[in-house]
Image (cartoon, rainbow, N blue to C red; front, side, top):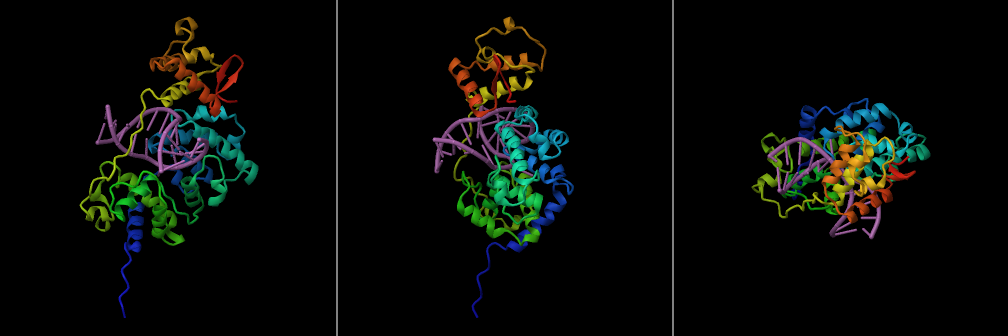
Length: 321
DNA sequence: AAGGCGGGGGT
DNA sequence: ACCCCAGCCTT
């Protein structure tokens, strides 16, 4: 009788090792506590889209205290969400995290829905976030693939230093194939993510601490260099920087801001106002310090209005009501 | 498939 | 200085 080819890799071994490592090494994050609501998990997932855990923690605590259920946030103006978002970055996420509860109230009786398809239909919820909420909040056997998971799979199974620039169908197929039975799905999803975040990091992986070091294809291959160089995002001088500075002004403002102040056509001293640190005046000076052109300032303000991150209010501009 | 969209801490 | 982070949406 011919010997069947050994499955490569031994998924069962990986499941046990990573689950054991996770139980012993997982960070105590509040959205992982057993009593955390699906809403709390959903808020964490929105905030964690491209923002590291350490910066999310304090803002998440404030949001959950202020808006303990989706309906509480849905009842507020969008601008309150944008203001409470603070400096987490990508403030469009705050708009979406404000719009999602409206859809939850409208379509799901105020309760975060529990299926992948229902979640995917919510504003700001893509394939990753839908799978993550379904898995972590509802223990649904969905396949969660984020940047950490992709990197772990690339190394452990594919022998590559880094995953491809964008998620491919082949990667998703591999991720599905590696999933354990539904009993272990949640721990597997969370465990692989945590392994990528704490040990199998992008820059300097802690291979000596890895629970699956002996099974790693990348280590077996001698840890080859990445086959491509990730393209970094420019920052200085970009519209994103200017938009961010304008949003910082609007968050600090307690009244509509005259557009001439944002566009730089009025002298700040002549405009008066409080000069103390931390106020709107300080944020305006930071905006001016970018030395953006009139065209760029105008383009950025128009963009913020277009995006709904700001709106006209009387003679000025303010966060959306 | 590619590009826009924040911001800060680690290296 | 540069890199990276629990991505999503539009073109």
